[in-house]
Image (cartoon, rainbow, N blue to C red; front, side):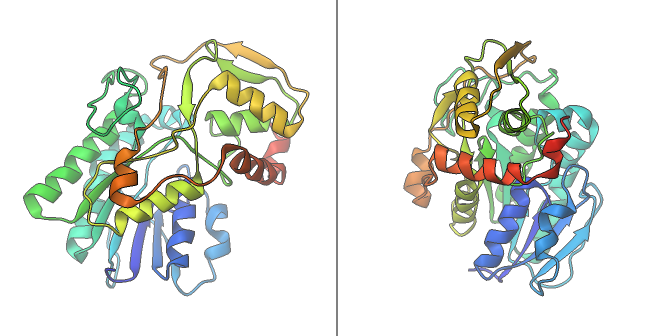
Length: 318
């Protein structure tokens, strides 16, 4: 293990806060960097009093300095939901480009292992199913989703350039749809939207005819995969996601069943460039990292429903 101290950019976000917790549980102290554009200090409030955790409000598009030794830099900073990156398109492109460079240069300065949190969105609306890491994708470079898709694709290219030209020990993880506690009820993604609607008795809004699919992975499993890649010597890219594929209409009906909600389904227009299918080929993660998801969908959704039921924002529909 490298020096047991890690920097997590975007550490106050949904996924970042869970990664901070997991690192601390492994005995790795954490410096969390976040500008709180889409993250929230509520996600890390329970860590604030720890001596092995430090929060610094920083904009990654500006040069960043962290005093002391660092063994790992996890670059998660970015808007992640379509609602957020369509609201902040320029900021999303900037943190994916200049922000990634600044995080890479921090890792280079410290001699740290760098892990880029990339995304299944680099595959776009895939023509190959399931998606292996060797697939180059089908992305519309000028569509509304391109600000996120292309920012992540550029981040992958920049990370690869630092690894090949400067010898930086860098890795890329491609994260598929992840869910769990601390998702914002109003962030626009399917699971938090469906849960908020079901728990408040609203109709669940399905885009298109609901036949489009996603593969949903519990955040605990996603974080385990990220750590497994960081602690290995593998450069990636490596898909981390669940092979459990479900249609959006099927997911909505499952959430209605699990919540016991009286809600009905309501179909609305499907967004431009919304992927028709999404499922990772996880053979590489299983072979190279010994990783596969453990949390069943029902178990994960029940725990998420329990958390959402305590969330005060549920009482204030978006």
